[in-house]
Length: 171
Image (cartoon, rainbow, N blue to C red; front, side, top):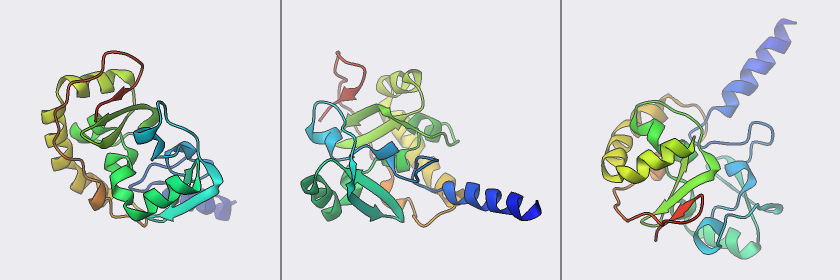
């Protein structure tokens, strides 16, 4: 019985990384294609056929073209703060962002734990990003896993939010 508990604990530790992954599959962004957030009207699910492993985590894409674009410069398309909720990071703690709750601002992808967190971000982007950028190095250093997270620190941006739709995309 003790070996079973150790195996479960080791598996749980392996899931805590700087990049948020699906707890069942280990795939980044619950299998959504990160490039699709920038080129499609809505994010698209990727396919295992177009997988690319970056920072020790598999990422799925809807096409070989999207995979190839991501491979050239992953940090441009990957969610900031590894997919952790930017507002949680700005407040000094971690919570997994949800790929369906997002904003693209100044060509950066941000995920949120809740729509209230997204709304708070849209009201105070500059200060939220400044706090998140200050907190991320310490928070990401405490995480375990193959990625450093340093390439995913957000940048300051201020673009007015779109007024329609559940998600916000400002370019």
